[in-house]
Length: 314
Image 1: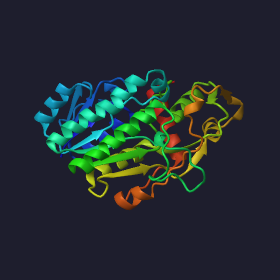
Image 2 (image 1 turned 30 degrees about the horizontal axis):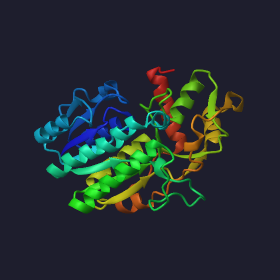
Image 3 (image 1 turned 60 degrees about the horizontal axis):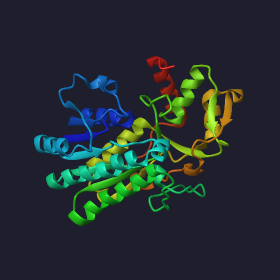
């Protein structure tokens, strides 16, 4: 197939690109490199089936040109502002990128009848109250402008299924981690903790550290993203993906550092947008896509640490 992948130079996007190319598809990546980096695509630089365009999903004329020239079968829409604190500090940028940009993508896909796989987030959910996990009918809570913009975009995506019959699916991966994730301030908790451990620094936990996360290894996430595009069974649906196991940030830090004395607690930068418990119920993905995670948390952390050591990002 001929595929458009927005945000394909980002952390999850480059793994989605890798899987699509391995499956033999032609992939056009559109990325403005605000979060991603061309270096993430170095592995595929010589693949004739990969094309890269630097540009914004807010550039309507560029989108029109790409859709007219390439004639896509699927659009995997991962391009977005992704940082919760940034959305609190500057909600306009997040709204434009995540909601308005998604609308522009939808309009092109409607004109050319291209399936849309929309990458949303588990951050749209209200906290999990027990160990049964969060399924797709769980209450949502826009606790940050990031979550609010994603919910707005989700509703637009699903409206194009109901109003126009355009094949669309909303996917909500839980906290994804692994190789190629940033290890600095905009990175994920696993990458930051591992980097600090290897650098001999303390692992700083925001707040009390009792908040839990369901951590999904990035290759499992990419497989989920790709399969959502291939299957008609999920058209018009919202689908979760996660490990199905949560861990407190305190326990995660101890698992990574192996030494409680290297862990400290600091004031939370956005306590109002914290979700106290995140635990995924991925039974819908298993039922409709025959998908389930394959990499354990311990193995995923081992692979992440090995990558950070290898790339010398300490």
